[in-house]
Image (cartoon, rainbow, N blue to C red; front, side, top):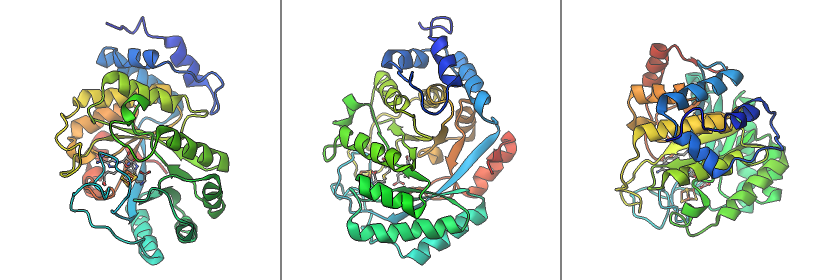
Amino acid sequence: MTTIATIPLSAVRATASRTAAPAEANWRVADVEAHFELPFMDLLFLAQQVHREHFDASAVQLSTLLSIKTGGCPEDCGYCPQSAHFDTGVEANKLMALQEVVDAAQAAKAQGATRFCMGAAWRSPKARDMERVSEMVREVKALGLETCMTLGMLNAEQAQSLDAAGLDYYNHNLDSAPEFYRQIISTRTYQDRLDTLANVRQAGIKVCSGGIVGMGESRVQRAGLIAQLANLEPYPESVPINNLVQVTGTPLAGTAPLDPFEFVRTIAVARITMPKAMVRLSAGREQMDDALQALCFAAGANSIFYGDRLLTTSNPQAARDRALFDRLGLRAMP
Ligand code: SAM
Ligand code: DTB
Ligand code: SF4
């Protein structure tokens, strides 16, 4: 078994103290896996140390999600209730009106969110969509909120126009290790995802990229996902770790659930390998009890989706989250 003495602590230290654009970022999958293999308490201790070097361990960033265009997506992502390939009962809607989006953002701000993430079930935005989503960015930003969008694949020009509109973050997940990816999605490649992330980075927008666990992947494949993210140069500013929300009708419904401690390990390893990133405890929180969420925060998660809906599935009520924060002495990050 790996012990705290045998893992490459020098690598952890080097990573913990580096700046945003590390020339030395080169996590081997085996080194990441060695962290997963640590005794649970040692892994949590390491993750806490790295977390406390860069953050107030009791401050958590609050992002609210809004689905601005739901369902009818041409992609076949095996986890997703919004794919037109699967019968999940999610209706296909058109792009939401600007005022509806602004109203939702205002409500999110009133609840205490600092970032507003707008998601569309597109393969990629069409030219006619770009002006409308850019307007949404400008108006939401004018409310004093950070803005994030997730609209599918972007080319360089689209990324530049979102940057010009003032977009702060673009979310585009790698989702899984490259070796596992083709079992989950056939309509776009891993390289397509990397190209979108490069276009976003090049345009000067901050990168939000993470993945989903609990899809039947192996531990090495979870390590493979984290290594891919950590080796991006620089690694993403924001890293959502989603636990698969199983939706009836999707091919992944019925997958054996992940051991909750393995989910916590994934958070800890993300924290250790991407020390300055916001690591978001993302989808799947509604299915977790308070004690498991507390362990995720202890492992270095410092961001959540806040508000009673994710995109099409439910998320804990804001009041439940506020009560949990009170019990744990957590504070919303300003
Ligand atoms: N269509 C865009 C795309 O795929 O890039 C943006 C929206 S898509 C729903 C955003 C992300 O949500 C996916 O990359 C995936 O990581 C996550 N997601 C979707 N369905 C999920 C589920 N059932 N459980 C957990 N995460 C999910
Ligand atoms: C991310 O990594 N998770 C969010 C956000 N980015 C867009 C989406 C979770 C979706 C969960 C399934 C649903 O509600 O449809
Ligand atoms: Fe479409 Fe995004 Fe869902 Fe894939 S994850 S089916 S691209 S909405």
